[in-house]
Amino acid sequence: MHAVFVHGSGRSGAAAWPGIDRDDFVFVTRYGFVAEPARTDFDTDVAIVLEAVGEGAHVVAHSYGGIAALLAAAASDRVRSLVLVEPAAFSLSRGLPATEAHVGAMAPALAQWERLDAAAFAVAFMTALGVPDVSPPESPEGLLTAERWRLQRPPWDAQLDPTVPARIPTLVVTGNWNAEYEEVAARLVELGARHELLEGFGHAAHEHPEFMNRLQTFWADGGFSSDEL
Image (cartoon, rainbow, N blue to C red; front, side):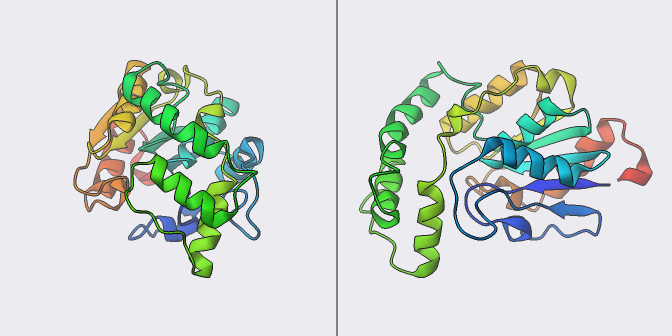
């Protein structure tokens, strides 16, 4: 089963998918996560995903990586299926109450990306997410993560094709802990996706011990041959 895994905004590459390890799985690293942090480039992320897809593959993506996965699926018929773990596909759920509350809270913080340094931005970012008593990061690793957050474009800037879930088998996985991600999932279901809940792991539903079983079942239910699985 040739599958491409796309990370979110924290850990990158294989480190973003603990416990998932097969020779036929490819773990990509999005633009701005390889070396020096860089401003999000949706087109470059799509190119990275499609290069890994090759002649055809299933794509599994988490959070912000779901944007690249959906854009890649819209751009190429070589994406055979999508599994989206709490995707930040907020452009599809705009107008729904939790999504609008999230955008309203986060937009002012994200708009300060050119004015604030990494440490100050991390405080603004986490405070907007509702985390109380945030202290600025001091370690090199914490500052590097904050710098990548600072350079991340608002996810709702990505113009996503709402026809993708009707054209490509799509599974959305959420943890039932956060209203805006459940709104995204509900919208994707309306558009043709299937929805699974894996509770107890917050935003990291892909770290649930049942995650691989759900993947295998989804691929099998999609009619993909046993030698691919």
